[in-house]
Length: 627
Image 1: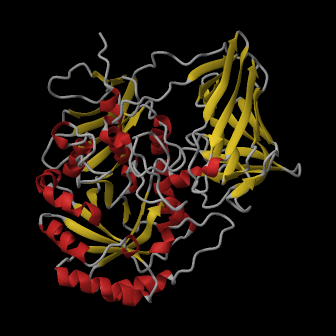
Image 2 (image 1 turned 120 degrees about the vertical axis):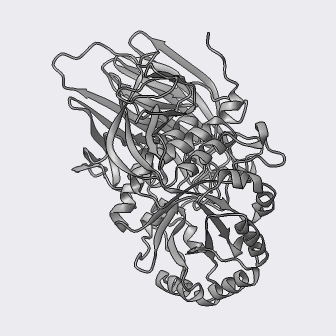
Image 3 (image 1 turned 60 degrees about the vertical axis):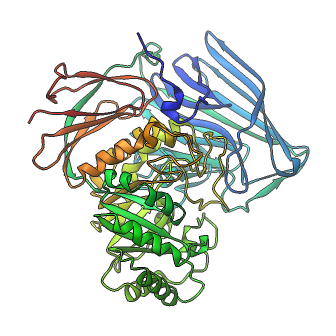
């Protein structure tokens, strides 16, 4: 008998996602969801991650259009879909997109759309986005046809490209399997590709309207915009297999020991001045977590003043571990003048961090292709000022925002003791599947950082589901209704088991980067381990992610060993061996369905003798292993 799980326990909200509609045309299978196509497969193999028609606002927020007149026809040899998507913009502006999607067995999949506005409509982007997967595709050959008809035989980038790998695109063809190819043809405008792994998206994104063109731009009233995507599968097998379907009950996930090993990173917590009072009030919880690092954030442009250091000093006094001060330097005066003023405030408050991370505040602003770099003092001058103002303190640099910005503005590492950056999983999409899929991109990010900075000590964080800052617009998105929206400063899933699973999955996927420190949460606030006033309050006030962070902090400094999953899109795991303790298998189900797990040669101790177990949706587990 299966026990139904309350969605609130999983997602921190009773609002559930609309399940996709599975449609087929011969060997082609797609999931239709929210007006777009997801998980496009041919004979069971993923061809494209998505084909979507998206409309962005001036802050790069994504509209969630109303879908009218939806008609879906699944017949024996194919399917068709039609609907009208309606977007309501500022000042009563309206945009309507008429969509028609068709696919027949053995023929091309066609997704065409016509956008029309009667009022005029402002947007940063309006049109198709095509997502290619990354695992098993990165570094592989592709053929790109350009708008002038020329063809380029090249490769998808393996290390993450800071800028667009391909421009002026009309079509791209890649190998799905050894004998199956897919051509995606894009009509109606000029397309280009960006490496979305920069933002931890698990995809290469081909999108409409080159970024070198001005944005936001205005669609004139009465002017029709037509675009079309044509996906053609080439199956070169002499005897094609029978049409396959995705199994309703997937096979068990098998775990086996891998060859990689290393040392578990220190675990940090981010402390914002706005959350200092709540953090002090939760001193018992802080002691229970026992993080190795507290990361204090200071940003004069956000109104932080000398008073913040009194709170920081009081919190640091409760903490037995290390502390780092993260400074967003305004750079309105010479860097040395501003750094010395901050150092004076720290001295007056008796706050003595072990390390400083410093970055010009303006460097958090994204600089897309074709944009002018914002005015900023040379980073060498900023780092020299920090060394002078904070003598004897370790100095870190990089970006207070995301890997994207670090990849595009590569900081001089010579003066630095460590490199740091953050990630965020809801920059472009906020559905459950897209958020969990960002874990696939993290090893590409860490490998790219290592390719740039070698064995320089390396930290990541704070990296949380809620977005703390938006480098791509004027603000993060308020989310009072607790919905799944991109770029939101609060996310309901942080209150549920989803966030607990995401955090352990995050740690598992970055282990071989050799991180010095990993910060995945705050103690209090929207990204905190404990719920605050007016927020949904879990049992004891502790959010489920509390358990994962406590476990990771306890394991810091332990030896870990790789554990290979037969299906890393479902279950992730690793073995940790604290000093003088028996090894522990840490494992997590990162899906919304229960998954059976076979431990293979891993020998559990204690009650679990069968070597098989079932992990509930988004469940985190720990199993003691025999020596």
